[in-house]
Length: 411
Ligand SMILES: Cc1cc2nc3c(=O)[nH]c(=O)nc-3n(C[C@H](O)[C@H](O)[C@H](O)COP(=O)(O)OP(=O)(O)OC[C@H]3O[C@@H](n4cnc5c(N)ncnc54)[C@H](O)[C@@H]3O)c2cc1C
Image (tube, rainbow, N blue to C red; front, side, top):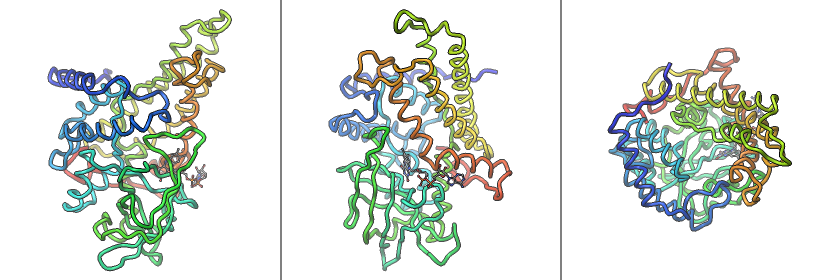
């Protein structure tokens, strides 16, 4: 069976257009460093400007509808953009996880107010889900939203949302609107402007390094007042709205394009001669480990393509995304362990060490593969979701509405 995407001549011409545009517009000094903690403030500012330019071209969120500021392009076009941007070490940016709930649950006025500036790259969003006492059990939310005339007053805190000191943005996530209502019927979903009177942020220092494009923070809200139309969906439908985000975050849109640099670099490393004239590529145990991650990398890619194809063709989806997400997380850990076995101490040398293989990619991967087990509800929660979807959990779970199932758009 042929799993490759075959592009038409028109699409290949589009690829050349994207590639030329990147060559003309992105100076070498603004290409992404290997370590996401390394960009300078000047690079961040350059990229924010570039996101606005990409938004104006419709390349920031290519598949989103033109009438809301997206590109109105096909999934193949999006894949070409992703391929070319990754090839050029360029940050496409834009937090796409806030977009599906706006498209599915927002009123027309709310789409104009929030979706349009996001699709055009004029505003950015940060996901505000985790509270200090509850991450995995998201429904146990405690941060309060109380209606006061034409506004809501917000009090509470969050941990782990991203942010940037000077960049106006919106935090999005649930707040407890009705403490008397039953679980899952007691939340509202809010777009919360930053900066705002009563809001404060403290930056977190995480062991894996500070990703400057998504720096993590503690967020505190002390009588933060937001207009009534910043509530997306009904007063009691926040759980349903946030699940439209989670559907995507938990793998429900798949990935048409995925290049596993680490698996490729492990194989590449075994071709090279390293340290004291010893050739690790001759070691049969290491060869087997490398073949295992190479096969897993291809399985991961195929799972991603299958889910993407199902989503784009509006096919009924159940466990496929969750399984893809879980497999990807497990694969990431195996990849990191195999890189350590094969490269040994060289896998731990940072980007600035002259002996580091592949420009320091390995060391960054060692750090980030562990933190990637925790985001999006942790690996255990991925298993809980999968168990519910295949019907072996106490509770069964159907997929939340997504743009593909609940709107006329497949984005
Ligand atoms: C690098 C990083 C980035 C993040 N980015 C964001 C972000 O942008 N926005 C945001 O809102 N949050 C973010 N998070 C938070 C992340 O979503 C939470 O860490 C995650 O949901 C787990 O919540 P917790 O840390 O409170 O752990 P807890 O909920 O306290 O869980 C602790 C442990 O218990 C396990 N556990 C809990 N319940 C169950 C269960 N029912 N069955 C089996 N095991 C269970 C968990 O898997 C975990 O191992 C990020 C976290 C990290 C590490």
